Image (cartoon, rainbow, N blue to C red; front, side):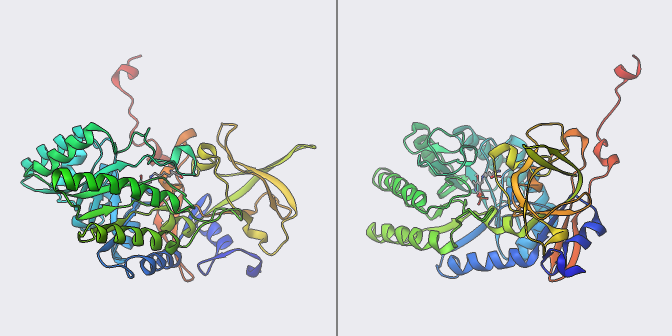
Length: 430
Ligand code: LLP
C-alpha cells in the first residue's frame, strides 16, 4: 500500500497527514544537513576567514534555532521577535547578526544589552540609536554598514533589494554614507568592521555578485585614500536560487563562491591589504527545498471547457508566495504518487480571495476529494510569512529525520486564535 505514496526523509507523507492533520508543513533535517554541508564544502571549508549566517527570516522557530546552533552557523535576525526567539532558544548572542532597515529603539536595545555579534547599520539615524544604547550598556558594538550597490538583479521586483532606488542600506554615492562611516569610525562605542550588501533573492546568475563587488571595491579604494580605512569584514548577503519547478535553473554554491572569492582575493592582493573576513547570509538555499506542504483535497469544481479546480484546506495564508510574487511550485498527488500525471488542474485555497490560487494548470493523476497533495520547496518564506486571515489557524510544522517524525511547531488552535481579543467596557456598555 505505502509504496504508492510520496515518501519524504524516510516518512510516508500520507501517514503523516493522517497523524497530524492538514495543512501540514514538513521539514527534512537530512536535507538541511546536506545543504549546509554543500555550502560549507564550497565556502567555509574551502576558504579561511569565512562564515555563514543563516537568514532566519526564511524560517525560524526555537527548534530551528537549535538546529542552526548545532550546525555551527551564525544567525541573521531582522527584528526583536526573531532576536527573542534566538535568545530564548539559547543561541549564543555573539553569533547573532542584526539586519533590518528600520530597527526600533527597543530592538536595538535588546540586541546591545545581550551583546549581539554584529549590528548592520542601515541608516544614519540608526547609528545614533546604536551609539546611545551602546553607551547605556557599556558595550562597544561591532558594526557593518549596509550598502546598496545599485545593480539590478534578475528576480521578482519585490525580492530585489540591492538596486539604488531601495529602502535598504546606503547607495554608494550618498553623502549620508560618508557621514555614517566617519561617525562609526570616530565613535568609541562602535567598532566599524566593514560593509554588507545583499542584492536580491532567488538569484541564478553570479554576475550580479561580481558587478556589486566592482562597485564596493570603488568605495573601498576611495575610503583607503581619503580615510585610511581598510575593512576587516565583508558580508555579501544571501540570495542563492533554489529549485521550485522543473524550469528552475539553480546553481551549485561553488558557481557563486569560486568567482566571488577569486575576485575578492585578487582585489585585496592588488591593494596589498589582508583579505577581510567574508560572510554569507543565505536563507532560502538552506531551508527551501527541505520543506514540503501537505493539503487534503476537499471539493472539486469543473468549469466545462475552462478549468478544473481542486480546492484544498489551506491556501494563501500558509503560502502567500504565488499571490505575492506569482511564484510557481511543483505539486504532486502524494496519495497516488505512483500514477501518471495526466489531468490538468488548478489548485485553489479556501481563503475568500480570487487570488488564492496556489498552482495554475498543473498536471496530476486523476484526483479525488480526500487525496493528499504535496507542494515541494515550501521550506522558505512559507511558514515565516503565514497569516491568520479569515481566522484560519497556522498549520503545524513536523520535523522529519530518516524515518522519524516529531512536532517542531504545534498547530494553532481556535482559542489561541482569539487569545489577545478583548471586549472593552465601551463595547460591553453598548
Ligand atoms: N540577508 C538579507 C539582508 C536579506 O534581506 C535577505 C532576504 C537574506 C539575507 C536572505 O536571502 P535568501 O538567501 O533567503 O534569498 N519573501 C521573499 C524573499 C524576501 C527576501 C528578503 N531578504 C520570498 O518569498 O521570495
